[in-house]
Image 1: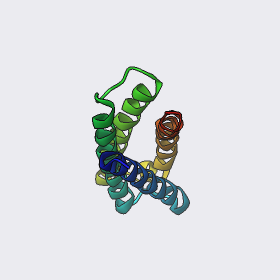
Image 2: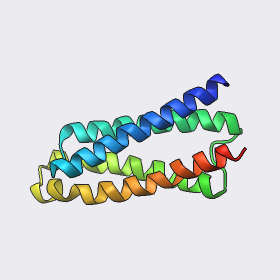
Image 3: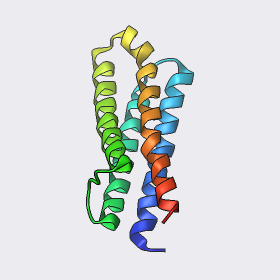
Length: 125
């Protein structure tokens, strides 16, 4: 297996693991905590590394196809999600802290679209 492909797959899967743990732990615990935000940032970092590795294999950072556009949207949403989680925690607004998981789950579900499409399109090659 190509080393670049190995690292791309590794980091995308680490992103999935981190993001899933962060989002569902927040949901189960019923409120946003500092460690959830840290795991969101970690997931974003892993996803960015994995996406960069994948782009090196494909020859371009953004492809104007379903996977490329949903992937770009997902990374931008993950960035906004991590920033907003940090802001919510800094403001110490209990209502936002208790309801943040609703936003997290939506972002996670949207993030899964390019994750799954990447597996499907990648496996079909």
